[in-house]
Length: 303
Ligand SMILES: [Zn+2]
Image (cartoon, rainbow, N blue to C red; front, top):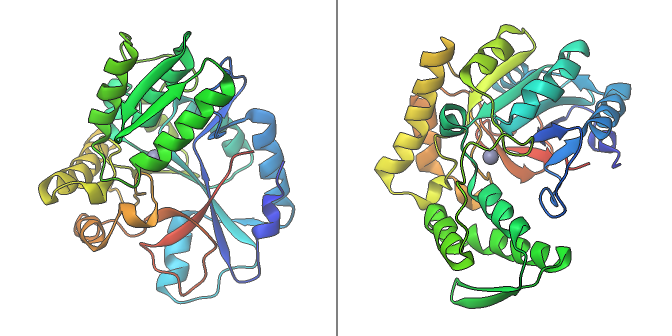
């Protein structure tokens, strides 16, 4: 396991980005990026951070930056993106017991309909391939063999190309589904890698003084690829739905995908208009008192 505590510095702040915590993984290919980490690794990461680190909530991060104060030495915060059920089932009880402030950013269509993200749909379909397949996509022909290596190599390439090509991610999923001849319903899966939290569970999480719920769009698109009205809807509707269902004022958000080119001035303006105070990206790095509240960096934890 990596020593994430090495990133903690004096007068600086590290925001860690998690997706999920699991007990076991029955798949061979899925979760190759380790966005879901094993419970034991999760405990190791938290214990390592706790040794010298100082846990803060993102509200405290906001206060520190807005008041131009130096961060407490070795400070860090914990965030989870996407709203996986395993956050509620496995991670939250541990975090609560350890009294660690954590922010959970949820994608509202995932909450409402137990939907899967585009990449989880593709990973699911590729995992299931039992004979050699070829796919024409992005003007390229890909051969996918029935080996773990070949499947992962295809997924890595697709992930890379999709995020850089103004891709319509729904169309991409449909195209791959047709070419593979996959007939599964790519929604409402109950396995630990796909299941999402529902409103009832989010309400329970929100009852803890250590936990904060934030937005992460309606459908998890790459916001900068959308036209003006769609980008606005993705931000506004997701915040409205959380506020309505949890009866809270939402002040937190994180950009889907979160790379530098996936959001911009337009998205930041929408967020500010909706009362969002602080929105981290997924760009790697650490923060200090001069960091911009809408360009905060994070460190992806993958075991
Ligand atoms: Zn996400």
